[in-house]
Amino acid sequence: MSKPLFMPSFDIASEVDIQALDNAVNTVKKEISTRFDFRGSPVTVELNKKEYQLLLEVESDMKMKQLIDVLISRSMKQGIDAGAFDFSKDAYPSGKVVKKEVGVRNGLKQDDAKKIVKMIKEGGFKVQAAIMDDIIRVTGKKIDDLQEVIAKCRTENFGIPLQFVNMKS
Figure 1: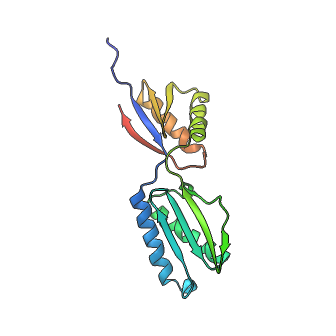
Figure 2 (figure 1 turned 45 degrees about the vertical axis):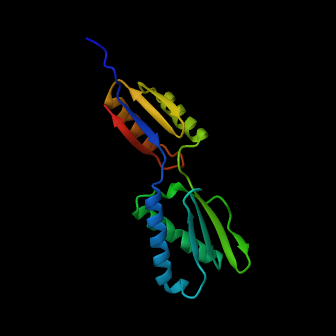
């Protein structure tokens, strides 16, 4: 019996569809423009597609929290995980408005990828995991082994949204 040339594999990625994000931002703008609590107050929601960054501008911290809630709920309806947003930068006052820069995590960072590979290796799975730029390629002899890794990744909380793509058998 000859050995198969290709071993089953899949990739672990953490990507945000920029079109879905753009749709979410447009939905947020539309909803905010019709909401009574935002009537007459300055609100800006800008998406920088190259930098994967959002700039939010409102008149108070309370409105910033409401805007973020709307952003998260509308993004989730577009299939974007709430974990894709990096709210770690504090809002800062700028004249009469409060501004906040929100990063959108796109691609696996090296340290996140290392944590995931470490978890896979320590899990005793019969697979190999290799970091390739901003994805992790996982290969194994059996599809079942790969599915165990996917199940384990779904139960772990890495603080970032993960997608399991390019499944090849």
